[in-house]
Image (cartoon, rainbow over all chains, first blue to last red):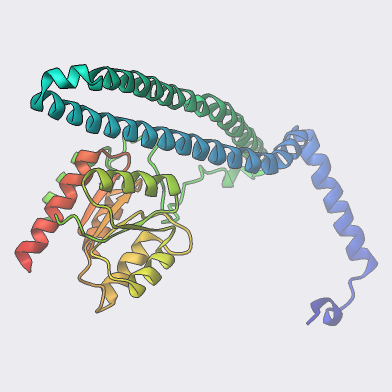
Length: 206
Length: 130
């Protein structure tokens, strides 16, 4: 159903008035100095989305790299443990034969090679932490964008609102899930660690 | 806790599922399946037998809260212990989860010791009440 087809046609005067109001709003925003900033912030919002997508991607890649390295290093350790047990059994059975047959020397070489590979995995884990620097910079830019946008909007609200309506805006809890608590200091509605979770549940009889 | 306990790990972040799977493996539990949200988890729970559910709360499609309600509302599934492992740290969420039937609640970030401790305590409690 096309509502426009059944609505009465607006008169040219109405269109003229709307145009005048739009122009006035545009001029007012410019005079208040918020228009360029608002425009910049609005354009930056789509950029912010891609930046945050980048953060998710980078942190995901880092986590995968680290987990891969951990799995490989743990496998090396497990293999070394098996080799050590095998050598210990050989030495216990016949220490002279274990040495003469080269079992001891072979083991030493295996351990040397394995520790070099494990060291490489540990280096990979260390290098994977570079996501913190990369994503930190991106997040800072997004935070700055959000602050700029908020500043512009608050300035607009404060300057445009009648004096009798200039009351502080209260944050309304939408009841949505809040995700990780960034700063629990001063808050009594959240827990800071697992001990507080356990204490809370114990106090309620769970 | 029996090594052949069948776990379902539910979290929208694959890295977190992988971490929990890795910790369970270190504890000797190899039978671990994964789901990326509550809806997929509920479908899997109805299709296959599981012994334990470890679930995040904040997930798309179906949250951990709704998954928990779905499990407790189903006569075939309500016996399943559900351990919430989540970044949600509001006290009201913790209380709500446990009042809704969660067997335990762990806040992220967590340690292997915490996970192991909670799993052992939950299974011990279930063994007593069986």
